[in-house]
Amino acid sequence: MARIIDGAAIARDIRAEVAAEVAQLRAAGTVPGLAVVLVGADPASEVYVRSKARACQEAGMLSRVLHLPAETSADELTGTIDGLNADPDIHGILVQLPLPPHLNSKMFLERVSPAKDVDGFHPTNVGRAFVGDPTGFVPATPEGIMELLRRERIDTHGKHVVIVGRSLIVSKPLASLLMAPGPNATVTLCHRHTADLGQHTRMADILVVAVGKPGLITGDMVKPGAVVIDVGVTRVDDPSSPKGYTLHGDVDFQAVSEKASAITPVPGGVGPMTIAMLLRNASTAALRAHERRNARKPAGAR
Ligand code: GUN
Image (cartoon, rainbow, N blue to C red):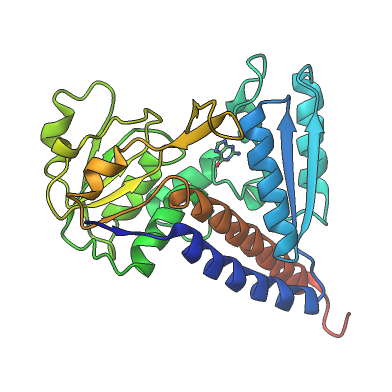
């Protein structure tokens, strides 16, 4: 039976570390501030935004949620982002995705100042992550997976990591982090057009699945002893549950946990890590702004 990787417990540790960093920054005169822009009323996004805002406050940060109507125009959203870019109290900005269909998300992700882009979605930060430049921001989910592997002492050196999914938010940055000097993994990236997916997943020492298709990975697709990281979170209707739905990962947990050596559950695996790493990025953004401001101050100024 696989060991269950307790992402919620690891995320709690990281959030406590971030809270300590925030306390130091506050004592030095900077209150880290994160703004979350939510356009429209996607129910899952509303839940995510509420938990991000709560987590921010619990870490001692200022949290500002800008909830704009679904009919918000491109000009209005641009104006909102420009206002946050110029606001000295806000160090991190996150535009919650998906945006309503009339708003082209690429245009708005590029509008966020790279120094405040705590999601790591601006092309400047995507490029910095790709070349291994630590002055950018790495998206929270892949960074959260790296941190889970580190804290669970799962060695990646020379290991074959197979990632299923090719998103810009998770899989592509994760592939780049894993293959970098340090982690030194051999990475295979599979996607919906990969022929015979099982042939690839069965070769994985570490299998990461980030697709959003419940039950995609069955027991026969996993090598005995593999480590399995399930990034999928899909709401499946379930009238017997109080919320009317339950959350499902991409992995058939029952069958795969009998073969794997370690596995992340859904919920309680990768999900809580994403919020913890977002907070860490926001705290880093505030620290950098604090240091820039101090560097500009003339000697003796307060
Ligand atoms: N929607 C789903 N995941 C994310 C995320 O990590 N960041 C943003 N901005 N929107 C999302």
